[in-house]
Image 1 (cartoon, rainbow, N blue to C red):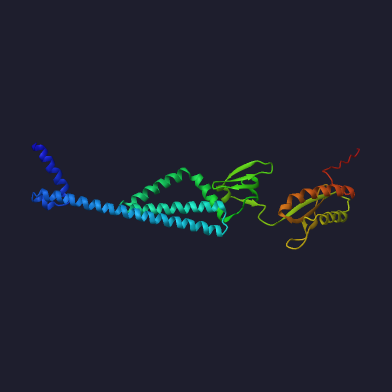
Image 2: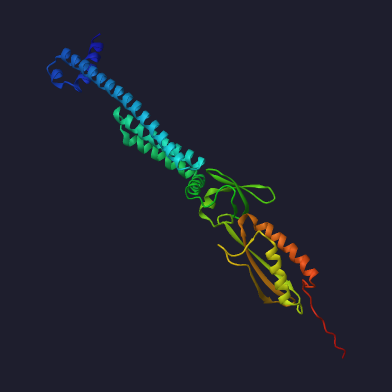
Length: 303
């Protein structure tokens, strides 16, 4: 019984010593207990008030965040922001604001926020190192959506892939090739590598090189080519682009080469390219112009 009384006395002394050392020194344990109770009640009231304040602040900040997100979405709709970019930016802003709200509420509750932030930072670094390639593609997707070097429907030559952009995602871009294969290209390479966008400009120049044989009439060939150009309404002549260009470009080993350059709307590039090749092949034959093939003349001398 004496040991129990001693333990109780020690426990009270430990609790009271944190609050009222003078009462313990005078042996006034009743005062010490009363001080402990009063202090506990004060701490409880203080903590309760902090919790109530934290709840109020949480509700207010939640309302503010909701209004800010709504205002951001309306602002992007007015500016006709691309749907994927709008959704992405809204998510980023919402996550950032909610994180700041949690930091504020935790601070109101009296929890040390520096260690809390350090924990999140450490976790972020670890996740970033583990997902470095994915984050690079993510950042590339953001850059593509912000600066728009290409859009859905553009014809590209990028990362060894030639085709039409089918879909731009956060991490990857889907490109459909001319033989109807869909290739998934990471956005990291697309945002940092060389990309040839054939659809960026309104007009494109189509370059041809036709050959006639030595002895054929060059002037006649030039007239034939000009007539074929004039007959194709898709070929632009003057205005915003240069006039069609025809010139003798090379005296080759077995042919006389003629270069032809014309401008067309970007959408008509391949149609004009293929149709002109076919038309020249047929018309040269009709006009008695030979399209030569590589040949070698062999002269035999008898000894």
